[in-house]
Each structure stands twice: as C-alpha cells, then as structure tokens.
Image 1 (spheres, rainbow, N blue to C red):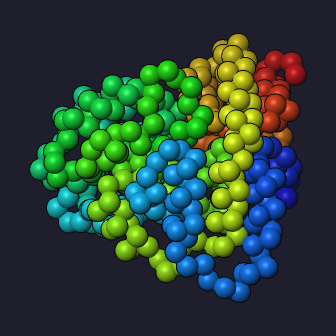
Image 2 (tube, one colour):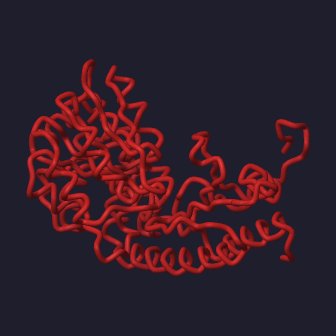
Image 3 (cartoon, one colour):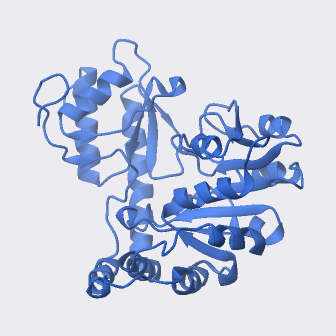
Length: 348
C-alpha cells in the first residue's frame, strides 16, 4: 500500500497495537457464533437473561447485579449519561484511559485529571480532588495504556474517602491477566458497598473484540439505570452465542493467561537489555520508553510499521517518548524485538 508520504508501506503482518488476544477466541466460541447466524433475521431480546447467569456462574457473582453492553465502553458511556450533567465532575488519573473524558464532556460535565506517579494513579491526589460536585471517580485497574495497577488496600482507601453522592467506577478490562498478589478484583468491593460498579469486557483475554460484548456488576439501582438507557436490542445473537461458549471454555482462558504471563515477562526483559525502559505491566501489553533523543519513540513506531509491525503511540504529551506494544504470539514478539534492535543500530 502507499503511505501518506507516497512511500510504499508493507502490509501489516503483526497487529500489536490494540491489545487484542493473540490467540483468538475459543474454537467453541467460533462454532457457536457461526451456528447463531442461521437465525440472524431475528432480533435478540433481553441478552441479560442469557448472559448474566453464565457470567455469574463463571465468576461466582449474582446474576441480578449484572448487565451487558457493546463492550465495556458502551457501559462507561451509559454510566456517564446516568450520573453526570452540568455542574458535576468526573475524577480520573491524568494519564489513564484516554477515552473516558469524552464521556463526561458529552454530558456537559467537567473532567478533573489528577497527576499520577509514574503512570500509577495517585490515591492521595484523587482524594484531594473530591468535592461536592464529584459524581464519578473513574479508575482503570490495571491502567491502560501503562499497565500499572493499584493494590486492594489502595483501592479501598480511595473508596473510603469518597462522598456518599459519588460513584466509584472501576474498569477491570484486564482483570484476567493480573498476577500481582496484592490485587483484588472489584466485584468484592461492589458486594460490600452501595456506590461501586465494575466494568469488564470479553474483548481481551476471551478474544471477542469484534463481537463487542462487555458487562457491568453493580448495585441493583445502578444496574437498573444502565438497562433502562441501553439501546433497543443491544447485542447481536452471534455475539451472545460466542460469549456464552467463551465463558464456558475455562481451559482456553487459562492457556491464554499463562502464555501472556510468560511472554510478557520475557519480552520485558529483552527490551530492557536493549537499554529501553519498560513500565511494569499487569495487562497484555507493555509500555516502552525510548530514552535516547536520537532514537525516538516516533521514529521507532515508523520503523516498525515499515517492517509490517503495528504498535501504538498516543497524542498525549506524557507519552511522547513511549510506544505501547501488545503481547502477541512469541513469533510476533521476536519479530518486533528484531525490528527494534535494527532500529537502535544493533544486529538482528
């Protein structure tokens, strides 16, 4: 293909830019989605009645506290619609998930972006930012695009300081990849409090990014509000069928989790050997700093793309010297390492 500069650009051979599962969905999910296409002329009514019990059984949750949507982003947007408006505020970590401010702005709310500590959300600064206008405190745990996380104690300290009129929204999109011993999945706090909601997705470890299936777990009144403002017929029948099969195939999920952990650790070590700085990650990606001003992250991104490897850069100034690389298959990561090594001036 011809790039914007008129130079021929090789086709992408390794998609390491969007945190998709390198191993794809469970074969059972593919088969279930294909079978569901036979009835695609019909609307699927009330997908919660199908998916919520399966999600509840998989994670040991209450089905009546679960609702589903078009990925977790749909649910985050609905939460903003339900709880934000003029004169209200959403608090977030300044370099956290970059899409979240848009949901607040769409509802005429203010965004308070709190400085972080080397890309890790600062609980102390988030607490200091709270006031009577705070309606949502948003926390991605682990964070994206850095892969950092907050421990159970830190999340609970954040929640304990919140006004009763505020809702803590915890985005656990990468929950299944975490192996830190002091981490806690947000569902436990949801069950103990009345102002906490957890958002999750099947786009990552379950390999269903194209199916667009997310879910939320929260207090009954919050879940009821999210259901009421959902679009009519919110999920496709093939997506629901794939989601059910993916959730039931625990062996496939375990395989992907173990493969990601091994390759994430190995890949991080290899990048560090090249003199690059890797932010310790609890997700299926790593954020890599290029500290040499003569070998910039922007130039590294361009070099990798011209070798057919897609990675991710961000417009935020805080990420100027960084690229984010999804943990792909081992062969893809080896090719990425070779491309970076060549870019830095070493041998492949």
